[in-house]
Each structure stands twice: as structure tokens, then as C-alpha cells.
Image (cartoon, rainbow, N blue to C red; front, side, top):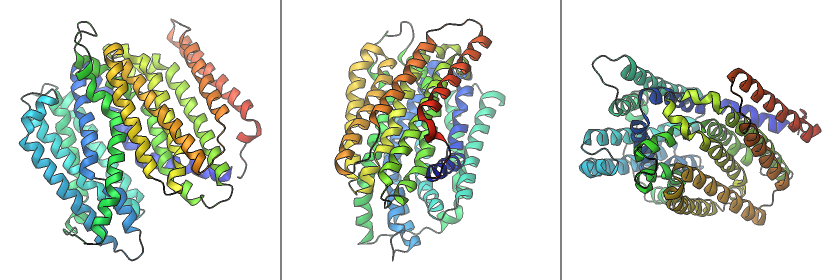
Length: 480
């Protein structure tokens, strides 16, 4: 159990250093949903969904390529930094100029007709994000975790502070979407100051041997990242396009997107847990790959990870009657029923990351690209058919279908190339029992909020007791 305990501790540390900024950003949901109605929040959701997808192309997989080539014996780290940063700056500059020239038609596509200023601000945000990506990767390579965390936290501190000021205290401004984007741009501009010495040390470079190798290495990573981000953001991008007019009565398609986007944010606790785990788990898997007992160890890691995710799924789902107040406007509450579906989708995504260890350890990473592209196809097709008949509920189900399919495919391929003794029976049992607890508890209506919350705490306690007895001695702290 010792190795798993160390992994858990590293997950917490990575969570504090890398995930805390994302959690602080999540807290803006309360402010935004309190100030903006669903229709305006739908605009914000749509804009940043597109930003998330396009950012992948701006960076072009060069973060990972930088790690790979800077770590190779004989390569100068400064030289590789210059090469990677050159690629990112060239691609980002070309795309940024193109987007600025096409700002008006892009604004029409993004449902912000006539707001070319918004398009230009978003382009600037993506440009700065891209040129800061390699410097942040350099801090990770140099193990400067504190400076990495300080940079991220200061950025999010500025972002939150400006949002609060613009939307709550600034005189003479009517709260609007433009102020949210402007706050983001100002916060990103901080990176130019934070990384000034590193950016000034950069020199444009090209190496006839290393540069083509970096392109070849980075391109599949960019494609995989693009497919993965499509899985994450596509439903938010296409909901407005594919939702039939009048589907939600008098409410517009943007209104529905706002409700969906806000409720999607409540699944962030599962997503943050998975992200923190990934930061710690990837080096853990590689460092233990040569151990003859590694398959059994990896199976146990997935087992305990699943238990944690099931507890989060239960705790969040049955306490939505309290968590709904985090969404400031009651208009958003109508979409709360999709949150358990999204939490379950993220649970499968987390297991996919665990199962994917086989293609990373056997150098068959092209399977990762293939599986992610299959997931992207499922996402697109499922949204196409489900949105017109089920609205944003269809988009939530599409996310679940995508991540479930990716998990199943990855599992069966992994058992062929790198067998790991995952206890599939127990996995299915835990998920089934958790869902029975979720929907069984939700079916019991208690009008008194204090009594309802107390009942939910008892349910969680009973669930934990059942886990304890189900696991027996394996949950006691022992050295692996």
C-alpha cells in the first residue's frame, strides 16, 4: 500500500499546485450566473468552447515535444526551447492574423455579430496562452513547481479580481460579456511580464535535423488533443446550431446553452480530481513499469481511484439541492438533472486514463490517437441525433456514450498487448451500486432542507461503511 499512499500524496500536491487555479476559476461561475441570465451566459459558454478547441492548434503539441527532445541526451535545453517556441510563435502569429482579418464572419459564426472587438480580444487571449505554454513547460522540466504555481495563481487572482470589480463595483459600466473577456485578456497580459526574462532569452531557430523530428512528434499529439477537446467542447459548440427552434418553449437556444454550460460546471469536482490524479499518475506508472508486479499494482491503483470517484459521484449528485445555490440565478436549476450523467461520464474518462497506461508503456501511442478520434466521432454523431430530440440532456448522454466507449475499447486492446488484472466485476458492481444510491436517494423528497441534508450525510456515511466492509483488509494502511 506504500506506493499507492505516495501516489495519493503526490496527487494532493499536484492538485494544490496545478488544480487550485482551475478551482478558483470555477468559483467565477457563481458570480457570472448571479449577474448574467442563461442567455448571456450561453454566449460566454459558446465563446470559450471555441477558444478551448482553437488553443490546441495554436500550441501544436509543442509542450510535449519540448519535454521529449529537451530530455534527450546531447540536446541543448536552450536550443530545444528556442525551436519549440519558434514553432508556437510562427503558427500562433499566422492564425491570429488570419482570425483578425476574418473577424466579422467569425463573429457571425460565434453568434456575436458586429462585435469584432470581442473576436480580436479572444484572439489575443489565445496568442498569449500559446506563447506562455512552452515557458510553463520549461518550469515543469526544471522542477520549479513553486514558480509554476505562483504564475498560475497570480493569473487567476487577477482574473477573479477584475471580474469582481467590473461586474460588481465598477461605476459607469453595465455588466456585459465584453467585460468578462476583457478581464481575461488583462489577466493573460500578466504572463508577458511574468515570463519576460525567459521570453527575451528566446531566439528564432530552426534545426534541419531536430525541427522536422519535433514536428513529426508533435503533430499526432496535436491531433489527439484536438479530438479530445472536441469530445469536451463539441456539445457546447453545436447545441445552439442543432437545437430545434422553440424546443424549450419561449426560451432561446442561447438560453438552453447557458443552462447547460452552468450545470456542466458542477461536474468540475470530478474533473479536477481526475486532472490532479493524472499529473501524479503518469510519472508513477512509468517509474513502476519495470517492476514485475506492476500489472497488479496498476490494477489496485485503478480500483482505489474508482472508489474515490464513486464517492464523489454520490456526494455531489445527492447534494444538488444545496449545490444549486452556487448557481446564483434559479433559472439555471432546471438543468440540474444532467449533473449525475456528466459526473458518470467523467468517471469513465478517469478510468480511460488509467487503462491507457498500456499503450504508453508499450510505445503504441498511436492507439491513443485512434481511440480519441473514435470518441470524437461518437461525440459528433450522438450530438447530431440526440440534441434535436432531447436538447442538452442529449448532449450529456453523448458525453457519457463517448467516454464509456473509449474506456471499453482501451480496456480490450490493453488486455491484448499489456494484460492488467482489472477486476471488471467489481468495477461494474461499484458503479451500479453507486447509481442505485444516487437515484434511490434522489427519489426520496424531504421538504425541510436541514433534514434533507442530514439524510444525505447519513447516506454517504452508510456508503462509506459498505465500502469499508467490502474491501476488508485491503483498505488498511499497509506497505505495498
